[in-house]
Length: 371
Ligand code: GLU
Image 1: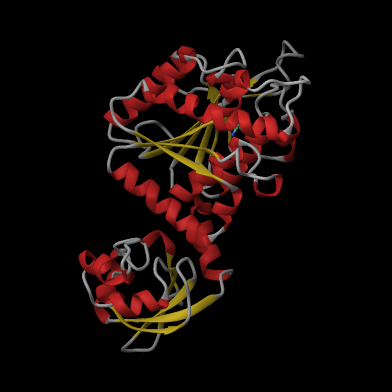
Image 2 (image 1 turned 180 degrees about the horizontal axis):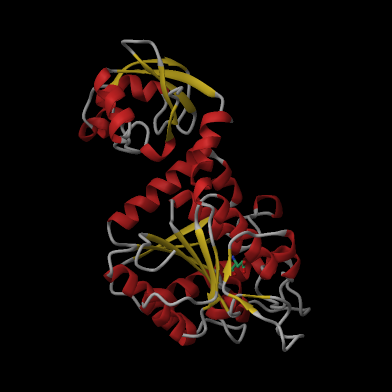
């Protein structure tokens, strides 16, 4: 994936870049990164930033009896440091920035998954930079995503990013550990992440960061398997951003398998149990089949079964009775009964809330036509 082609970029910035000394936040690397984000926005791209660094930023405020902080101490560091980390970014932008803090549970739950996605879309449509981090102060071990490489990959998938950039303090992947082997060769392009590649990855050496090369490769596996090109590069070298914008290759690019782009759709089609049926009119059948449209309330004729927001439902043609598509709904059966046939301007008045202007988004729809 080249800079030019990408439309929605997720950039993950690790603690080593935010807090190079391990204490507090610094502009040293974040300023050039902010300039790059600004340039992307100027070039009409949408950017989501996943930023670590809250623990490092809060470290100085929590007194430690031992070198290694306890979980509660880390959570306290994150609570006080999150503000500092956000302020460190916000000062570089004229445009507004938004904070989103997530736990694993939020990403597991289909309803909040959709809410997070809707929120991100809304922020991006309003030219706001979403800055995402794990909600470290409240997440217990079981609820933790664990590391921000993984969190960033999950958000890249959820948000439909087409490029996932992992800004780190390493130049990418090498044939062996470059710290130990001076002959280690830099690997600019990985077409397939094989067990040998995985074996090259080591753990973290940074006390404040959770991830290491291993978690970066895991994140690349996750993202590329769902069609998102992943770039691991050295974010502490500002020339990398200039080169990348000029179309030069930087770091290590993990190429996505284009055929796998439909993995999510495959999942909707084959794995999800549907909880109900929505009968749709011919206009909606044609729009969905031929024009790649979302399902609008105007296309709904009747609703069967009990389902909630985030559940999978079958879309049936009311005239032929044929199964047309399957999708994940933005509204419950109850809500759809109230808003069917009605313009989305009226949703809030009728329901008392507004989640989406469509019933099922195109990205959450798969056609069930048999060939
Ligand atoms: N969420 C952690 C923080 O803000 C970072 C986790 C990680 O380094 O992967 O400090």
